[in-house]
Length: 159
Image 1 (cartoon, rainbow, N blue to C red):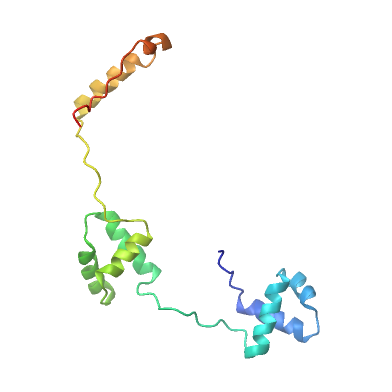
Image 2: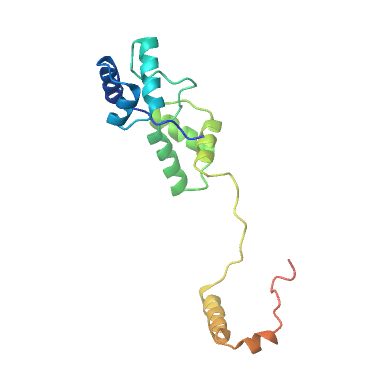
């Protein structure tokens, strides 16, 4: 579901002033480049509450602001091995907010950081890298007949 676009208060006031001057909903929509349903909803809310200001959103207020979340993400980017508990303690001293480590974990998950350890990969030294590259270059321009007769073996058989 697409999020509704917030109409600025000054535009809503314009809708109400046009409506009070006797213009139709369709005409107001064309003038202000708004849909008829948007204009209708603004007028309906004005009739009900005699106000065009934004209503306060329901739900629990955010623990961290966007700026604080960016700071947390920057800390994780600098050192990915930092635990949530340590981040919580750093955040507590920096923002003077006492939060649960689970809150920090939720922020990290929201930004696609999950607590998983990467698979260990074998170390390939620079010398070995050069040897492998030379070997690959030696066979890269071989004709297709050569590859039809070649037997390829996976070097990780023991795994």
